Amino acid sequence: MKKAKRISDVPPYLFAKENALRDELVSRGVDVIDMTVGDPDIPTPAHIVQRLVRAATKPENHRYPPYEGTKTFRSAVSSYYRRRFGVELDPLKEVMTLIGSKEGIAHLIWALVDDGDIALVPDPAYPVYLTQVKMAGGIPYPMPLVSNRGFKPAFDDIPSDVAKRSTLMMLNYPNNPTGAVVDLGFFEEASAFAREYEIVILHDGAYLDITYDDYAAPSLLQVSGARDLLVETYSLSKPFNMTGWRIGAIVGSSEVIYNALSIIKTNLDSGQWNAIQEAGEEALESSPEEVIRANCEVYKYRRDTVVRALRRAGLEADAPKGTFYLWVPVPKGKDSAGFAEELLEKCGVLVTPGRAYGEHGEGYVRFSLTAPTERVEEAAKRISAERWGGR
Ligand SMILES: *Cc1c(COP(=O)(O)O)cnc(C)c1O
Image (tube, rainbow, N blue to C red):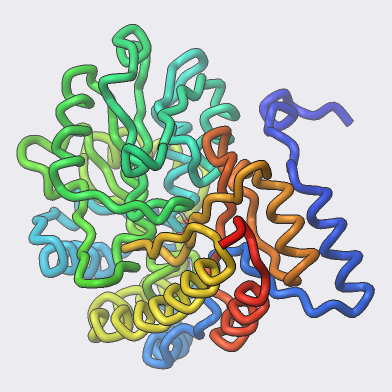
């Protein structure tokens, strides 16, 4: 078999060693607590499941869905944006249904990045941005996210010849993996930069509704002025515990969504099942705030439990204002893969080495808080029994 270059170029999985160690520990009967994946353990709320069950029985839902999504789901997204962010969106021109936001992010990259174009990609980041830019033949230009800048890119550091060759900038706040958050001023700054060089900004809003401590995350579309270069993906996966359902939306620039992304999508997929879009309407319309608040309370308890344990063990740990991840600096003299292995060996706790998210992820490990609460408590107990950094 001859494989296409576009897939041979995808970086290999760097952590085979850690996985082998996990398998060995499990086979020896060690109780391993997996805190790697960001996939809510809490079930989808019953009213959303019930709505799917009802929608599944309707024969009109057994046929192909509209490519761009149902009018009712797009209207539900538009109303949600008005209530949640004060943003007005034309449901038929500025909203499109996605088969999960990962699908939309990947395909928007295909729609905007040509061979040799530059895409500005945060480092560390959700790996899809980098791999899709490479698959599309584009050149990723890393925007380092470092702690002393609050894990925000410095637009001034991007050389103007790079900016001129860039067609797309990726942003993601609340941020996976760092847990960093931003205010609207940051989006204003990003949008001014994008306008100067005519770069589309895709803001990945997967965690817009996973926030704590009275912080509410802004939408990129709240920036003043034209939104012709601005789009944002919203996902129901994380706020409504619906990762398996594959439902989200892209909102913003009509030109980007309906004159670029839709050309890829109409030729490639046939939309998301109407019944799942109905369930998505239910999520956005039936007391979404209550569902979100209840989930965030659970994550907040887990967050505080693990942060306390890490500090007791002599590690540095900040409680993030958004996402369900902890981005923890590794003790001096260790690298992220080595520290992840040590956590696994000493505590039976599996985390992701920061290096998996990019070069600037080195020096950190990521804990996900989507394991069941009693498992998170057990992990905290084991961690706080250890001593790192000689405190
Ligand atoms: C989980 C996640 C997604 C994917 O969400 P889906 O809508 O389920 O595809 C996108 N971006 C980030 C940063 C994520 O963590």
